[in-house]
Every structure is written in structure tokens, then in C-alpha cells.
Image (cartoon, rainbow, N blue to C red; front, side, top):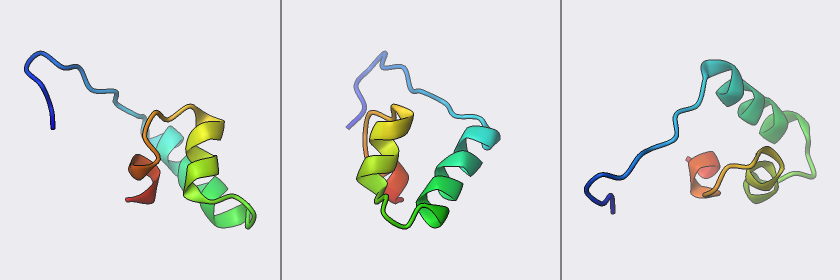
Length: 48
């Protein structure tokens, strides 16, 4: 749950497209590995 004063990271459309490309094209990479590779702090952001 968000806390008062918390800042959220925003991602560019290009970055989001790269996440989708990695997930779809790299068959051995799951969403957890994609999140780690791109430095996304929460793998659920990739899963959704």
C-alpha cells in the first residue's frame, strides 16, 4: 500500500516495450528474470 509522500517510478513507453520484448522473445526468461535484468524493483510490475 502506498504511503503518504511516497514517490513512484515512471517508465517510458520505450522501456515498457523493451520489457514486453524481452519477456516474449527470450523464452528462457520469466518475468522475475526480466525484472532483475532491467532493474525493476518489483517483479509483479512485469507480471501484470
